[in-house]
Amino acid sequence: MLTKILVTLLVIIGALFYLRRGRKTPTKTQQAIVEQTKHPLTNKVIIYGVIALSMLSTAVFWGWNLYDDNRIVTVQISSPIEAMSSQYQVRKKDIHARKITTVDGIEIRLSNQERVTISDYNDK
Image (tube, rainbow, N blue to C red; front, side):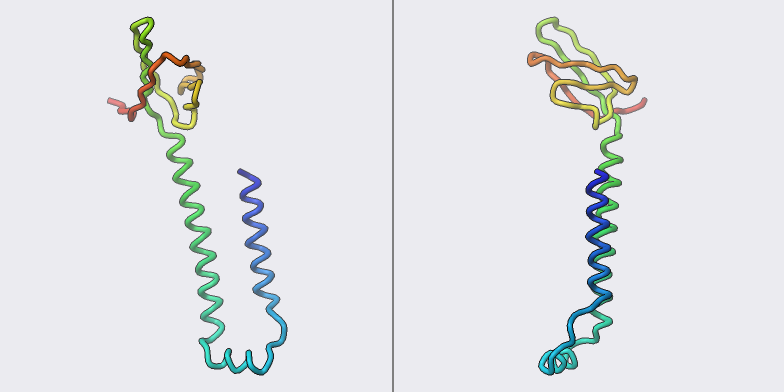
């Protein structure tokens, strides 16, 4: 996760340096085209706006994942062999294919025969 953040920051910094340095001196044809097109300030505003929107949407996405992963759900484990059922409160991020870890820190290993039902946790 830290690697992704660092790579993203490096790309943004590189883009900013590229935009500030500019390009080669334009030819006469390119100068004529630039004079007929919109003002370059508008282009920079659009580019910075897209970068800001991208960073904001990434932050919202990470925040939502963090919130959703830490939600507490009720996990009901039913064993057809022993004809018993147990309920546990578990964070969504602690549910794996063969193991769950409860809010209290208890690790429960699951077998192939057990049936797992996940539902929202309602503190009533």
